[in-house]
Length: 54
Image 1 (cartoon, rainbow, N blue to C red):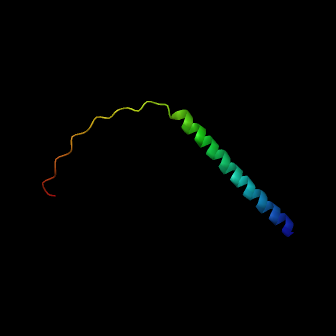
Image 2: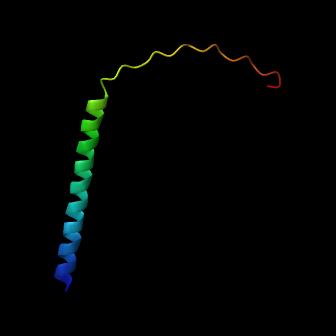
């Protein structure tokens, strides 16, 4: 029954895009919620001395 195959493929396609959309929404809200954290200032490291064999 080709109609059932077509319907199955269509619903699978729609379901996949819907899930991807929900994941992107979740990631965006997660990024918004986690962004206000303060960033720690890192010390500037002295450059390492050149190696004698280079």
